[in-house]
Structure formats: C-alpha cells, structure tokens
Image 1 (tube, helix red, strand yellow):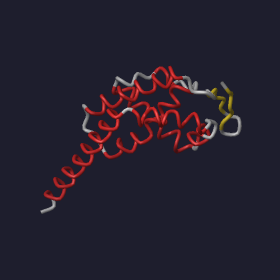
Image 2 (spheres, helix red, strand yellow):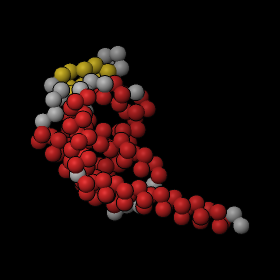
Image 3 (cartoon, one colour):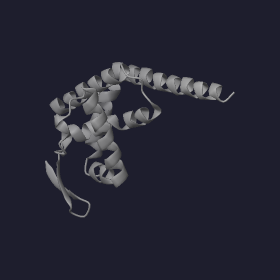
Image 4 (cartoon, rainbow, N blue to C red):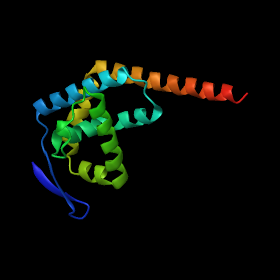
Length: 147
C-alpha cells in the first residue's frame, strides 16, 4: 500500500500497489451485482455513461481507502451513490490523480479478468440496448406531442 496526497496535499489517500487475486474476485462480484441491479431498472443514457466508469469506480472501491468499500453493489441506492461519487471525482480531477498512481500492469489484470467474464459482456450489451431503446421511445413520444 502507498499513501498519496491529492489536490496539493489537501487530501490523503492510501492505494494498493499490487492487486491481489481475492480483491479482483470481489471486484468481479461487485460488477456482477451492479449489473443485476441495472438490468432490473429502466436505464437512462446518463446512467449508461456512468456504467462506463463502473469498472474504474469498483477498482477505487477495492484498491483504495476512499470509503467506497462500505457500498453494497446489490443495493440500488448504493450503486447510485457510487455513480454520484464518480461524477464528483471526475469533475474535480481527483479521479485522474488517483488512477495515475496505479501501475498499468495491475490495471491490465482487471481488464483481463473482466474480458474473461463473457456473461458480464453480454449483460453490458443488454443494458445498453435497453437504454438506447428507451431513449428512442422517449424521443418518439416527445415528437408525437409536437404534432
């Protein structure tokens, strides 16, 4: 573990330098649970954008002491809290500062583990298709109201 200082020393954070297999497994389980929650929801386009950050946010959950480890990805409320935190981290530049600390080889371990999970890829496609379809229907409803 390594301690880093963000925003010119205003914020102290511990990050894992090496990603243990057990923590990677927990990340994959969190990923699966999050997609189960999202599959049951009508997902908006903004939420699809948040999903793009999901794996990175789960990396922060497992490999930092940001306090995200308390969030339960099988609970919709916690998942949306994670999305809100993601937006704040990206908007403030903290997200990038943290990710610069991780070794590329370790991040590649996560990417490979996610890629190897075919089921997750299939679920991502289903959720994205649902969101796109929902946006089209919403757009058509709005267009019909203009006539």
